[in-house]
Length: 283
Ligand code: DGL
Image (cartoon, rainbow, N blue to C red):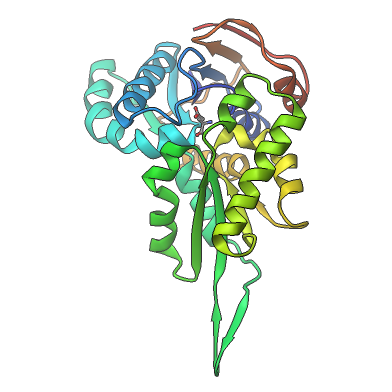
């Protein structure tokens, strides 16, 4: 049995890497839906259908647990699949299986950690307002999941989202660093203009963006903290597996990488990020 990790493409490798580092003995199957990437500009129903197909493929490959390492799939499809598809599917399979997302762990990391507050003096009253910037795909931005979930937990945090319609595709197709740098700098500027100043902290709310975290760091004022989805997710999944021994993660250190796109070697950026070349087999 294994843990499945799903993304529209290579971005989920950022989460996958953190999971593998955290649970080195566990078995992992990664699925990149590269035949259909990017998801970020697609209608919701398509994202739900594609995500369900990806989960089925991973359960067929022997996974007990699937982690949606994709903000777009998690924000648009996760709840729908958990409510309307998984209960029947689980029964038909005859074994416990589940699908988890990466948004809640990210929001817990964003709202649960102490950080510097900006104090604004208005008369005698001191107000603390943290401005959190979220960079994400248009579908994730449109879902408003970060605004809604953070607002439920912290009234002293204002969330501003910046949709980046081209960025996941550029990363997926191996755009060069200069082009990525210009694209990311443009989005950082646009967000700062909208807020009236740069954000105090930022969430890279698309798993592809984590691979270019250094470029985001360079585009934001020095020292702007970034909330890391991969670490937050690895913490949450480790705790989840401890609480749920019915989902077996395996223990032979299996690493399989599947793609619905063209099998073979992935682009140079992935290799750099991963620390070595990575070959995918046909899904
Ligand atoms: N990496 C995914 C995410 O976190 C999807 C990007 C896309 O397919 O548009 O949103």
